[in-house]
Length: 156
Image 1 (tube, helix red, strand yellow):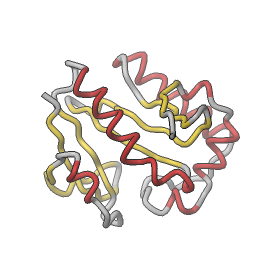
Image 2 (cartoon, helix red, strand yellow):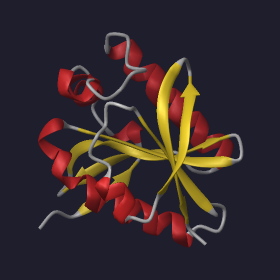
Image 3 (cartoon, helix red, strand yellow):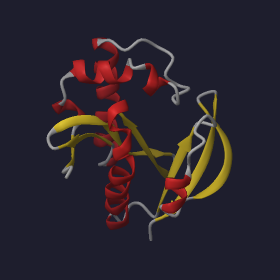
Image 4 (cartoon, helix red, strand yellow):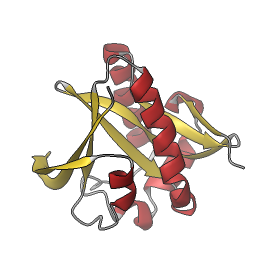
């Protein structure tokens, strides 16, 4: 049994994040990942995510399974919407549904989040799990110069 916990990214060894984000299997579905991850990139990434926590009281977590780092993800406010993202280590891809359900349960309990959006690159063909969660396709959008498929899940 995998005990899934959420903690802050500041608690994770930067080398773990570098290894995760440098894996080509992770980059395959991340069109905005167009730079090399090193200690400076991780420091900037963690600083940016911590700024979201300071600004919005919520942000991306480090995700652990049985106290082992398996990836990062969570909610980031984009305008008036809370977008959910999840980036796992390749050997942990199978935990995505369990982690997403736990995060969605968090969103349902949080009155600040009336709905959640998801942006997936068009390269992601397997979206059945997202639909099973109840998310509906909104349309194609451009974000930071890249095309994404946008989905929305009501949480109220």
